[in-house]
Image (tube, rainbow, N blue to C red; front, side):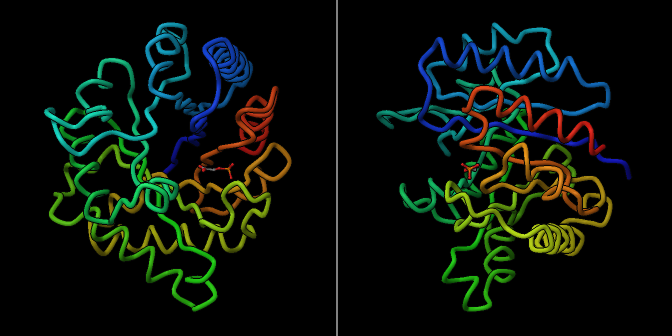
Length: 255
Ligand code: PGA
Protein backbone atom coordinates (compact mmCIF):
# COMPACT_ATOMS: atom_id res chain seq x y z
CA UNK A 1 0.00 0.00 0.00
CA UNK A 2 1.16 3.52 -0.81
CA UNK A 3 1.26 5.45 2.44
CA UNK A 4 1.16 9.25 2.29
CA UNK A 5 4.21 10.71 4.06
CA UNK A 6 3.42 12.40 7.36
CA UNK A 7 5.53 15.08 9.00
CA UNK A 8 4.63 16.42 12.42
CA UNK A 9 6.11 19.41 14.27
CA UNK A 10 6.12 19.23 18.05
CA UNK A 11 6.77 22.70 19.42
CA UNK A 12 6.72 21.44 23.02
CA UNK A 13 6.59 24.26 25.64
CA UNK A 14 8.07 26.80 23.24
CA UNK A 15 6.88 29.85 21.24
CA UNK A 16 4.93 32.97 22.03
CA UNK A 17 1.77 33.67 20.05
CA UNK A 18 3.54 35.70 17.35
CA UNK A 19 6.18 33.01 16.84
CA UNK A 20 3.52 30.30 16.75
CA UNK A 21 1.57 32.12 14.04
CA UNK A 22 4.76 32.75 12.06
CA UNK A 23 5.75 29.08 12.25
CA UNK A 24 2.25 28.05 11.18
CA UNK A 25 2.45 30.36 8.17
CA UNK A 26 5.87 29.03 7.27
CA UNK A 27 4.54 25.44 7.42
CA UNK A 28 1.60 26.44 5.25
CA UNK A 29 3.80 28.15 2.63
CA UNK A 30 6.21 25.19 2.55
CA UNK A 31 3.36 22.72 2.16
CA UNK A 32 1.68 24.73 -0.62
CA UNK A 33 5.02 24.84 -2.43
CA UNK A 34 5.35 21.06 -2.79
CA UNK A 35 3.47 18.94 -5.27
CA UNK A 36 3.45 15.43 -3.85
CA UNK A 37 0.81 14.71 -1.26
CA UNK A 38 2.29 15.06 2.21
CA UNK A 39 0.32 15.30 5.42
CA UNK A 40 1.71 18.09 7.58
CA UNK A 41 0.71 18.65 11.22
CA UNK A 42 1.87 21.29 13.70
CA UNK A 43 1.41 20.76 17.46
CA UNK A 44 1.44 24.08 19.35
CA UNK A 45 1.19 24.50 23.12
CA UNK A 46 -2.46 24.48 24.28
CA UNK A 47 -3.08 28.26 24.41
CA UNK A 48 -2.04 28.66 20.76
CA UNK A 49 -4.12 25.76 19.44
CA UNK A 50 -7.17 27.91 18.71
CA UNK A 51 -5.41 30.87 17.05
CA UNK A 52 -3.13 28.56 15.03
CA UNK A 53 -6.09 26.42 14.02
CA UNK A 54 -7.99 29.55 12.88
CA UNK A 55 -4.94 30.78 10.96
CA UNK A 56 -4.58 27.43 9.18
CA UNK A 57 -8.30 26.91 8.41
CA UNK A 58 -8.70 25.66 4.85
CA UNK A 59 -4.98 25.04 4.40
CA UNK A 60 -3.18 21.73 3.82
CA UNK A 61 -1.60 21.92 7.29
CA UNK A 62 -3.57 20.53 10.18
CA UNK A 63 -3.17 21.10 13.89
CA UNK A 64 -2.41 18.61 16.63
CA UNK A 65 -2.22 18.60 20.43
CA UNK A 66 0.87 17.45 22.30
CA UNK A 67 -1.08 15.52 24.94
CA UNK A 68 -4.54 15.18 26.49
CA UNK A 69 -5.91 13.91 29.78
CA UNK A 70 -7.16 10.34 30.02
CA UNK A 71 -10.30 11.51 31.83
CA UNK A 72 -13.39 12.97 30.20
CA UNK A 73 -13.90 15.90 32.60
CA UNK A 74 -13.91 16.71 36.30
CA UNK A 75 -11.66 17.86 39.11
CA UNK A 76 -8.29 17.53 37.37
CA UNK A 77 -6.71 20.95 37.87
CA UNK A 78 -4.50 21.98 34.98
CA UNK A 79 -5.52 19.17 32.65
CA UNK A 80 -7.12 19.46 29.21
CA UNK A 81 -9.47 16.82 27.84
CA UNK A 82 -9.72 15.34 24.36
CA UNK A 83 -13.22 16.82 24.06
CA UNK A 84 -11.81 20.31 24.66
CA UNK A 85 -9.27 20.11 21.85
CA UNK A 86 -11.46 18.09 19.47
CA UNK A 87 -13.02 21.12 17.69
CA UNK A 88 -9.55 22.48 16.87
CA UNK A 89 -7.21 19.57 16.19
CA UNK A 90 -7.20 16.34 14.20
CA UNK A 91 -4.16 14.67 15.73
CA UNK A 92 -3.00 14.13 19.31
CA UNK A 93 0.47 13.00 20.35
CA UNK A 94 0.19 10.29 23.00
CA UNK A 95 2.98 8.81 25.12
CA UNK A 96 5.79 11.20 24.22
CA UNK A 97 8.93 10.15 26.10
CA UNK A 98 9.08 13.50 27.92
CA UNK A 99 5.66 12.78 29.42
CA UNK A 100 6.71 9.25 30.28
CA UNK A 101 10.02 10.33 31.86
CA UNK A 102 9.18 13.74 33.37
CA UNK A 103 5.49 13.31 34.20
CA UNK A 104 5.54 9.64 35.15
CA UNK A 105 3.18 8.38 32.45
CA UNK A 106 2.97 4.60 32.48
CA UNK A 107 2.16 2.36 29.52
CA UNK A 108 -1.32 1.89 31.04
CA UNK A 109 -1.95 5.64 31.29
CA UNK A 110 -0.77 6.08 27.70
CA UNK A 111 -3.33 3.42 26.74
CA UNK A 112 -6.11 5.30 28.54
CA UNK A 113 -5.15 8.52 26.77
CA UNK A 114 -5.16 6.68 23.45
CA UNK A 115 -8.74 5.59 24.14
CA UNK A 116 -9.77 9.16 25.04
CA UNK A 117 -8.31 10.39 21.75
CA UNK A 118 -10.09 7.70 19.72
CA UNK A 119 -13.37 8.28 21.54
CA UNK A 120 -13.42 11.86 20.27
CA UNK A 121 -12.68 10.87 16.68
CA UNK A 122 -9.13 12.20 16.76
CA UNK A 123 -6.03 10.61 15.28
CA UNK A 124 -3.52 9.37 17.84
CA UNK A 125 0.19 9.56 17.17
CA UNK A 126 1.54 7.00 19.62
CA UNK A 127 5.18 7.56 20.58
CA UNK A 128 7.36 4.59 21.47
CA UNK A 129 11.04 4.55 22.34
CA UNK A 130 13.73 2.92 24.39
CA UNK A 131 16.32 4.62 26.62
CA UNK A 132 20.04 4.28 25.97
CA UNK A 133 20.38 1.85 28.90
CA UNK A 134 17.60 -0.31 27.46
CA UNK A 135 19.24 -0.30 24.02
CA UNK A 136 22.63 -1.17 25.46
CA UNK A 137 21.04 -4.03 27.37
CA UNK A 138 19.69 -5.39 24.07
CA UNK A 139 16.10 -4.64 25.15
CA UNK A 140 15.12 -2.04 22.55
CA UNK A 141 12.69 -4.28 20.65
CA UNK A 142 11.12 -5.76 23.78
CA UNK A 143 10.56 -2.29 25.28
CA UNK A 144 8.83 -1.13 22.10
CA UNK A 145 6.71 -4.30 22.09
CA UNK A 146 5.65 -3.76 25.72
CA UNK A 147 4.82 -0.08 25.21
CA UNK A 148 2.82 -0.88 22.09
CA UNK A 149 0.88 -3.90 23.28
CA UNK A 150 -0.02 -2.33 26.63
CA UNK A 151 -1.25 0.88 24.99
CA UNK A 152 -3.40 -1.01 22.49
CA UNK A 153 -4.63 -3.74 24.80
CA UNK A 154 -8.29 -4.53 24.15
CA UNK A 155 -8.78 -2.17 21.21
CA UNK A 156 -10.47 -3.61 18.14
CA UNK A 157 -8.72 -3.34 14.75
CA UNK A 158 -11.63 -1.26 13.45
CA UNK A 159 -10.80 1.42 16.04
CA UNK A 160 -7.24 1.77 14.82
CA UNK A 161 -7.70 3.00 11.25
CA UNK A 162 -6.35 6.46 12.13
CA UNK A 163 -3.51 5.35 14.37
CA UNK A 164 0.03 6.45 13.55
CA UNK A 165 3.11 5.44 15.50
CA UNK A 166 6.35 7.35 16.06
CA UNK A 167 9.53 5.49 16.90
CA UNK A 168 11.49 7.95 19.02
CA UNK A 169 14.57 6.52 20.74
CA UNK A 170 14.91 8.54 23.95
CA UNK A 171 18.67 8.92 23.47
CA UNK A 172 18.10 10.66 20.13
CA UNK A 173 15.57 13.26 21.32
CA UNK A 174 16.99 16.75 21.63
CA UNK A 175 20.54 15.40 21.68
CA UNK A 176 21.66 16.09 18.12
CA UNK A 177 22.41 12.38 17.93
CA UNK A 178 19.89 10.90 15.50
CA UNK A 179 19.57 7.15 15.09
CA UNK A 180 21.22 5.47 12.11
CA UNK A 181 18.98 5.03 9.13
CA UNK A 182 19.32 1.26 9.63
CA UNK A 183 18.11 1.48 13.25
CA UNK A 184 15.17 3.66 12.25
CA UNK A 185 14.15 1.21 9.52
CA UNK A 186 14.71 -1.86 11.69
CA UNK A 187 12.53 -0.51 14.50
CA UNK A 188 9.86 0.70 12.09
CA UNK A 189 9.78 -2.81 10.62
CA UNK A 190 9.56 -4.25 14.13
CA UNK A 191 6.58 -1.98 14.86
CA UNK A 192 4.90 -3.06 11.64
CA UNK A 193 5.43 -6.71 12.57
CA UNK A 194 3.88 -5.98 15.98
CA UNK A 195 0.87 -4.38 14.30
CA UNK A 196 0.50 -7.45 12.06
CA UNK A 197 0.56 -9.85 15.00
CA UNK A 198 -1.47 -7.85 17.54
CA UNK A 199 -3.90 -5.97 15.27
CA UNK A 200 -3.96 -7.44 11.76
CA UNK A 201 -1.88 -7.50 8.56
CA UNK A 202 -4.11 -4.93 6.86
CA UNK A 203 -3.33 -2.35 9.55
CA UNK A 204 0.35 -3.29 9.46
CA UNK A 205 0.29 -2.26 5.83
CA UNK A 206 -1.75 0.88 6.36
CA UNK A 207 -0.47 2.44 9.62
CA UNK A 208 2.13 5.16 9.23
CA UNK A 209 5.30 4.76 11.24
CA UNK A 210 7.42 7.87 11.79
CA UNK A 211 10.92 8.35 13.05
CA UNK A 212 11.66 11.07 15.62
CA UNK A 213 14.82 12.22 17.40
CA UNK A 214 17.18 14.98 16.19
CA UNK A 215 15.57 15.12 12.74
CA UNK A 216 16.60 18.11 10.63
CA UNK A 217 16.47 19.18 6.98
CA UNK A 218 19.87 17.63 6.30
CA UNK A 219 19.15 14.15 7.69
CA UNK A 220 15.40 13.68 7.22
CA UNK A 221 15.57 12.18 3.72
CA UNK A 222 18.10 9.58 4.88
CA UNK A 223 16.27 8.76 8.13
CA UNK A 224 12.96 8.25 6.33
CA UNK A 225 14.37 6.44 3.30
CA UNK A 226 13.61 2.92 4.56
CA UNK A 227 10.46 1.28 3.14
CA UNK A 228 8.85 1.09 6.59
CA UNK A 229 9.45 4.72 7.66
CA UNK A 230 6.71 7.06 6.47
CA UNK A 231 7.83 10.42 7.81
CA UNK A 232 9.12 12.27 10.84
CA UNK A 233 8.18 13.76 14.20
CA UNK A 234 10.28 16.87 14.64
CA UNK A 235 11.06 18.86 17.78
CA UNK A 236 13.89 21.42 17.86
CA UNK A 237 14.35 21.76 14.11
CA UNK A 238 10.67 22.68 13.70
CA UNK A 239 11.27 25.83 15.80
CA UNK A 240 14.25 27.19 13.90
CA UNK A 241 13.35 29.71 11.18
CA UNK A 242 13.14 27.77 7.92
CA UNK A 243 13.79 24.50 9.72
CA UNK A 244 10.41 22.85 9.28
CA UNK A 245 10.08 24.25 5.74
CA UNK A 246 13.38 22.61 4.88
CA UNK A 247 12.15 19.29 6.27
CA UNK A 248 8.89 19.48 4.30
CA UNK A 249 10.83 20.26 1.11
CA UNK A 250 13.31 17.41 1.73
CA UNK A 251 10.51 14.87 2.31
CA UNK A 252 8.71 16.06 -0.80
CA UNK A 253 11.85 15.74 -2.92
CA UNK A 254 12.54 12.25 -1.54
CA UNK A 255 9.04 11.12 -2.44
P1 PGA B 1 13.93 16.63 18.64
O1 PGA B 1 12.59 16.17 19.37
O2 PGA B 1 13.62 16.72 17.17
O3 PGA B 1 14.27 17.95 19.25
O4 PGA B 1 14.96 15.58 18.91
C1 PGA B 1 11.77 15.19 18.81
C2 PGA B 1 10.57 14.93 19.68
O5 PGA B 1 10.67 15.08 20.91
O6 PGA B 1 9.48 14.59 19.19
